[in-house]
Image (cartoon, rainbow, N blue to C red):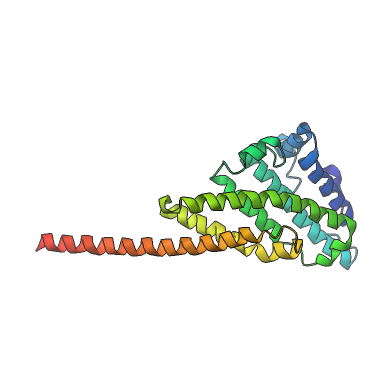
Length: 235
């Protein structure tokens, strides 16, 4: 972590982040916990690299965008782990995913949005390190897809019982996730397409909007009836 924050070399920073990613995914439990708790024991948030910039040449400036993007994704990975109460790759996570239905949805959608907010220099994927980084993120994203799909299917099944605030939150999450589609598709191309998920999101949004309109019309009709009843009693 000290190496990450002491360097101004984009390639070195990417290597540090890739090492951190491997620790998050495959490292020993104690190392993962050290990463998660680092800032709470006197360290700063080591993944806040919004100001990172390597101005050596045009390519390193483009690589700097990948550094900032990758760091933000790893930070969101740790957020997801905190929501789950365990790390994304752990055996326990496989049992938890799909069961926690409240906060987990927003954290996974935020992860997908961060992935979709990718640098525009996609040609740098020809570099082996960037290619491996994208491949590793793709593995994370597959887990995210599974959770979002489970969440959408579960909420669609009980759509009628949702409150108005839940409907609004659900619709906003679906819209936000759909907005990520173009960037995610550009990044992974034909990998991780999961057309079934996008179709499910689109269909569920359409049903949700229709149900919200019906509920709104029912509410208006109820209000008119109540006003007529009050007028009748007053006369």
